[in-house]
Image (tube, rainbow, N blue to C red; front, side, top):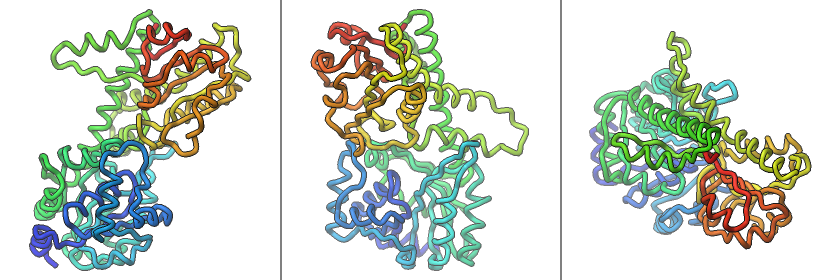
Length: 440
């Protein structure tokens, strides 16, 4: 099959699509293409996840507008199916790879899942298949890792036996389908013809700009955009530390700073989590590991943001000390374990770092989260008799809490707010000793 043949099949929505990895990226991708009229086969090694999808049930919880409903619809109509077998992908014209690409403790990419996918995918690629990697990868990974591994595993040559490109995802939990449709995408192929073919495919689901480029540029854009956000958040967090030290209010400062044209101070908070921002700056940095490029800003930003959960622990210890309570043996309730409000995604959760630090200091920790299954206990029972309450995630359910009722349940009215869910005035009016990020 030539690229011209494939483009015609895509135009007619006759191309058979495969999606490897059915997590926060792959599942919504499979759903939107199935909704657009394509035959989509999803592949994942998690048998329970596959069974749920085939039953028309979304394995992703939290507030995800439209996902559960459209998933049920496309499964019911037969346009989306899921499997645990790579062999089932033999008839696919296009295969999208969306597996996780973390970094290890040494800040080196761990491409285990990506390599495994490519090794198993290669032998089942039919001639002329287009492989698109949506996973975020370090610059030059397509040429230095993905292309040679696919050539080796398939026995085919790139641009002849198969075609290859990179279209990095731009989704966020809570806005998965919205971002797929309403955010521009960078489309990069090994050849201009491959890029055009990829664009033909994504035009069926993306309602805004598609920016056509090469693989390297696509890799750079994705890692740079998340490194940029990380640096901006680190600046806001450092300003919040200054405000605490001098007795200011970072929230008022931010409001007034952002009245100046071309200023966009980001939100400070209790830490940066998720699969992207904590690791994508390291992917960008990794691309120049063997070159004489002195990196200062990106590592510094990562250090600032990684320190914020530990700073919340320090605030908690200090507030308890002022109330005459030692941290050892203190009962501390942590509200929120996901990394993002109204989501069940716990990857790189700042709450995990906070809980580990407080437990290290001897505190007795109770955790509640509206969306994370293992922490969905009764909130009122969890906070009963606590010495301090720490809000780490701005779930809607926490924003609407009655602080006076909550005050009546705890042993000591110490409230640490890591996400500015409550105002100091609101909390103090309800009888709480309030400590918040960026407030002196």
